Length: 375
Length: 197
Ligand SMILES: Cc1cc2nc3c(=O)[nH]c(=O)nc-3n(C[C@H](O)[C@H](O)[C@H](O)COP(=O)(O)OP(=O)(O)OC[C@H]3O[C@@H](n4cnc5c(N)ncnc54)[C@H](O)[C@@H]3O)c2cc1C
Ligand code: FES
Image (tube, rainbow over all chains, first blue to last red; front, side, top):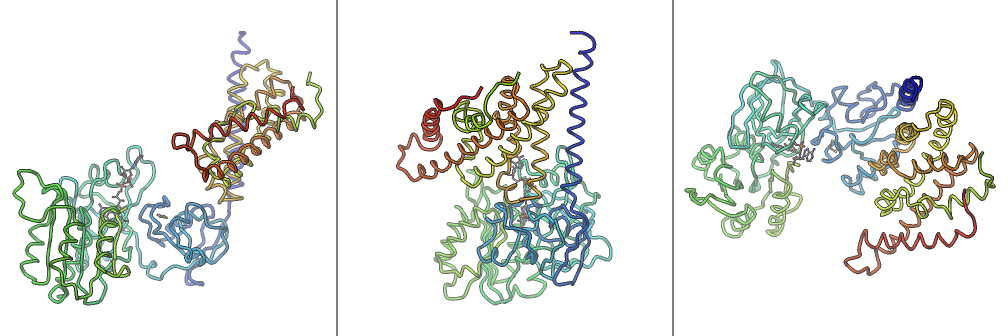
């Protein structure tokens, strides 16, 4: 091989690749340029000018309108529903699993899957205008079990954050290690809504999970962190029905908020509450003293912790077995069958589905079972 | 010298007798995995055809205007692959703009066209057989249509086979491979009619 070819080969390869690279970026400029477009919300209530080309969820968030999104825009939670009045083409295969036939007929869409390509008219509940992005400061991180941390955040001064116990906030963690993008996940408030200066969360480590690994291994006291809040419609209904509550692990969070609020308002005196908490071993139990105290103080409040795999040497006098079995036996023998009941469930999808089957077996009305699936 | 062959013979031969899938067995992975669903098969068939025609022309031009004059034919593998990768990227952007539904349903498979052996195979056949520009266009179009025809036929057959009482051990990939074997044999039936050179 002579010297000329030795240089020629890499040179021509370089030139060919450069030309192709240029072609790709020119096409990107032309094809992905949707220009400036307008998003009209609720017939002119708000008009947003945005650059076309991004998913609707992101375009709205950039203008401080936060549509709930428990999965952070991956199309796997179905929380980000928005009614789109303009024609933006047929529903995508990524949307249809999360939308009922009726919702599809009304042109409800998943805002994380719809790209803004032209000016749009959409409809969203007015409450969403209240959702804010807050830059909070981590005040305290406490280990409550081997895999759950209680995270206390201080709100910026002058924040007016009104939420109902049961609602949640979206944690936004910055890029770290191999994670290149900001990532959001939903966490229920465990704090008392009367505490206007703080927000509290219970976060369970999911091995390999993006946000929980960050919270457990990188988040430090004193650091700032963004939270988008308040979101969600899981809350106590204003009735006097008996509350049958079931939680597992970090599913404790919304109930902590709910019960502390009920103590403040005095509702806990009048309303019958059965709180079932499922854990594997004694290592997974927490807040026992506080709950035992509530049980002692208020005769209508019943706390039933249950272990599915108690350690051999554990001095455990409470219930054992899967939480569904314990729930079933209480519904059979201890809970008044005559009174109307409402179900409140929080935790893993598997546990929730199993509890719902039991509740239905005992004639509880499906429309009166409220839940937040931690998926 | 380009071979002497009528454009019609080349076109029909590349679709039927020398079907890139059933005679040369190129592009099998996506053929088997996507053919479960007719709609996706149709989309992918169309995408493969478009990519084949564009890359067939682009690779012919690169070969004849750059590589041969500079005596760099030995670079053809790497250059063809780079061209194919770029064309697929551009096509991806265009499909996303024109038909998001098709874009979503092709999902992961669109980038996979880059490593679809049928695409590189056609570019190399064009080079080995020394086709002229017009012949290259006809051959790549024919091969694309042939691939499209084959995947549509297979997905239609699989739709029927899914409902048939297939022995347990043969369900899924097993019966699909047997079906493909039969299809290939059927296509051999055309081989006396025309030949590509
Ligand atoms: C309304 C609502 C309220 C919630 N409230 C709470 C709460 O109060 N407390 C709480 O702890 N949780 C809560 N969750 C769950 C929470 O939002 C997160 O889903 C959960 O914490 C996991 O987030 P992550 O980013 O750590 O994991 P993700 O990164 O989302 O990972 C989830 C799963 O995918 C796996 N995974 C991740 N990356 C990969 C990969 N590359 N390859 C293979 N597998 C992978 C992980 O191992 C894990 O099993 C709530 C969820 C909802 C919807
Ligand atoms: S944000 Fe989860 S589906 Fe859209």
